[in-house]
Image (cartoon, rainbow, N blue to C red):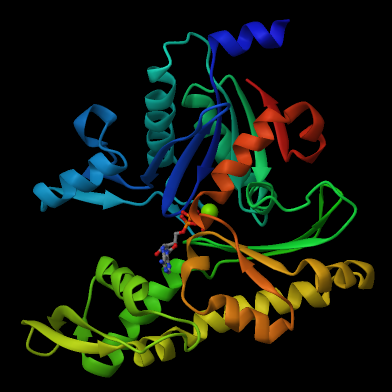
Amino acid sequence: MYERLRSWFSVDMGIDLGTCNTLVAVRGEGIVLNEPSVVAVKKGTNEVLNNGNAVGWMAKEMLGKTPGSITAVRPLKDGVISDFEITEAMLSYFIRKVNGKSFRFLGPRVVISIPSGITEVEKRAVLDSAERAGASRIYLLEEPVAAAIGAGLPFVEPTASMIVDIGGGTTEVAIMSLADIAVCESVRVAGDDLDEAIISHMKKTYNMMIGEQSAERIKIEIGSAAPVGEETTMEVRGRDMVSGLPRKMILSSEEVREALQEPVQAIVEAVTRTLERAEPELAADLVENGITLAGGGALLRGIDTVLSSATGLDVVIAEDPLTCVARGTAIFLENIEKLKDNLQSDMDV
Ligand SMILES: Nc1ncnc2c1ncn2[C@@H]1O[C@H](COP(=O)(O)OP(=O)(O)OP(=O)(O)O)[C@@H](O)[C@H]1O
Ligand SMILES: [Mg+2]
């Protein structure tokens, strides 16, 4: 009875607090918010512009229009909070934005996904931020568990399944069975490192500086982990490091693939290491069930091929890999009583 009443007066949210993107899913409604994890602050301060509202898309828009006096801050790095104050401002804005729409009075119950390798101090930081952002009750859910649920893996059944979530800051690799993580590894190599590899390649090979956004565009447009389909080229613009002047050049997909080899190999090694640590019975199940990829990095061309040839297992990309974790938190909310034992933390505020 109490639960039913509270569902009228508050909204339950699942939050995928990611290094690149933050998504919010509401019980019964699906994904209601999907914005970049970016905040615009006054240069040299921690002051969030626009009365605390310069967050997500709005921050991106402001940055384009008023460069110079404002800076973009990504408060999460490598999957964890690197700037507490700004993370709190960001979380608070997103929670208010979603809760505000529903005209309800109670603070929301929230499930937040966190990387599996995070320390107690880092966990505390997430809890504190959500608490101050107005959540009445906070649950932390390990990101690979959320991804597995979102990808529709047989998470609670007595058969092993494997998820590899390649995000912006971390890659989470986990083998699960019977609603629990059997083996997992979280490495701080993911999408951002692929962008950085492209930036450093341009510097080393052509003495050319390119921005993070250009690097990401190159990765998405012509990047790959293995040769798949036709090779292409792309025009790249940046600044010549010797003359200091703007410059453009043509970059090939083969060259980008070469530049991405190191971080791609680091991801492959995290996967093979995790497999080596699995009990034989679990490994045997994986011959049948294969590996499922989630996160934005799953969209890198050929990453499935590379992982499949390194492990000898079938590799499939989850449907809509960028929203897997958020959808998983929403499904988790719907089954919270049943799945509670798998929570990282259950904090009443
Ligand atoms: N088509 C694509 N090809 C390659 N990479 C992509 C593609 N689309 C998105 N990405 C990359 O996916 C990453 C973002 O993925 P995602 O939203 O899953 O990360 P996140 O959840 O914010 O990060 P984390 O889980 O590490 O905190 C970025 O590095 C982005 O460049
Ligand atoms: Mg993620």
